Amino acid sequence: MHGSTPGGIEPVPHMRGRIIAHMARGIERPAVPINRELQHVLVINGSKAASRLLGEAIQARCGRQVEMALTLAQAVTLLADKRRKFYAAVVGLELQDAKGTRIVEFALEQGLPTIVLTGSWQEETRRSIFSYPIFDYFVKSKLGIEDVCQALNRIPLNNSTKVLVVDDSVAARDFQIAFLTAHRFHVLFAANGAEALQLLAEHPDTTLVITDNEMPLMDGITLTTRIRETRGRDELAIIGVAAKGSPATAVRFLKHGASDFLAKPFEKEEFYCRIYNCIGSIEHARAITKAAFTDPLTEMANRLAFFTQAPAIFSAAKISGEALAVAMLDIDFFKKVNDTHGHAAGDEVLRQVAALAKECLKGTGVVARFGGEEFCVICRGMNRATAWRIFDQLRGVVEASSMEYEGQTIRVTLSIGVALTPLGSLDETINHADQLLYEAKNGGRNRVVMTHSPDESGNGEEG
Ligand SMILES: [Mg+2]
Image (tube, rainbow, N blue to C red; front, side, top):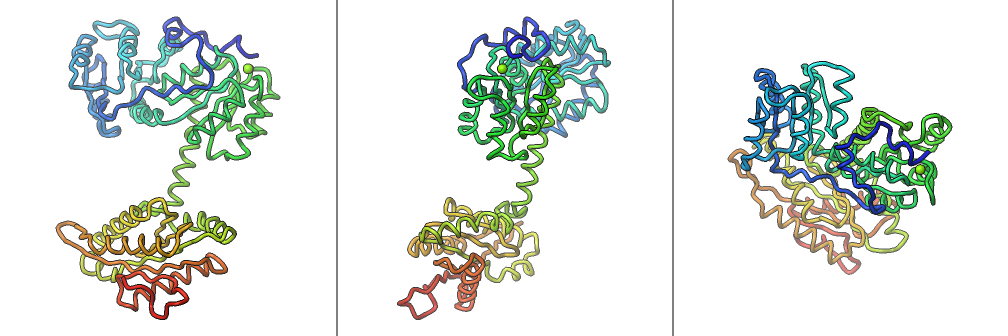
């Protein structure tokens, strides 16, 4: 099944030119990097009115500068001007000075991801356009303009999206790599399941694996099973590939955790539709997870994120007997900030204090906003001396900072309670930190109070 019919449709000669006949196994092929300076989109289209509409939409929805050419000659002039840098081209067919698909070839020769606009939906045109390694094609219409904008926004996203192609057939693998490269994905590839697992360990941020089944060392279904032992369906998508007419293989792939299945030979567009469906669902899941665990105001971990991570840190410290610090932080007289300067100013103060806390406590553990003006921190392996140094430094930094908001200068201070020994449970330890925080408040605020040492009789250290 492998090797003889790579991918499906016959590769056309100019596409073959892009494919390297034989490549070393298991190496990565990074996407053509999108330079942040490449802000411009080149629109080459014979109709001035249609181009203007498209240009306005691209500027509004993609935040990109648009340069327009009505002819091939104008496009050549624009590209010769090195002050402008282009990151993609949108081209219409049949220009005055470039008949048929000549303009598509031209844009691709410039190394630009190319989106083609066609006047109508004809099978002949579709086949002809899609024989080129274009990004996509759309019919000129209102909906088509939406699609163009979406495709343009996709290009930089694809650049940082890793896709791993696993196939022992070099030809089949190269075929898929060519498709993925045309869409500017960061492509990794492996010749069997074992190599794929190794690559995934090196690239844990991979979004999609496309795997053949019949391969030496480890087949695709075994690979799928192994990946699913540690990676859920919402973390990593897997598409199984096998020859048409092997429905049992499709079922086995899906039953062992594949997100989807592709039967060879397949059309280029089916390939793209399936990979984008898979990538889309992973991106949605990631966005939902991020939203669920992030405090929207300060963009730091929220209470849910804290209670998802802290129990394991707490248990590990209890078992190993290593040092642990749990701290409660509270901005002093925060209500007064809101009453005096308004809630928007209060929000800005919260953002700035959160940023200072993140900076001072970077790499020490979990820092979360618990709600209101209260933050909670858990740090593994932090002894009394280190805790004192770090938390008192944070207190000092907040005290020394003046925060600007719409011409008003606002100063706040921070009170901190630090529990230094894990008590019976995480909750008890947090409550203890809370009591110490109240001692800090009662002691005059703007101070750190830590778990009292046995030889200590007073109210902890002075802040
Ligand atoms: Mg094979």
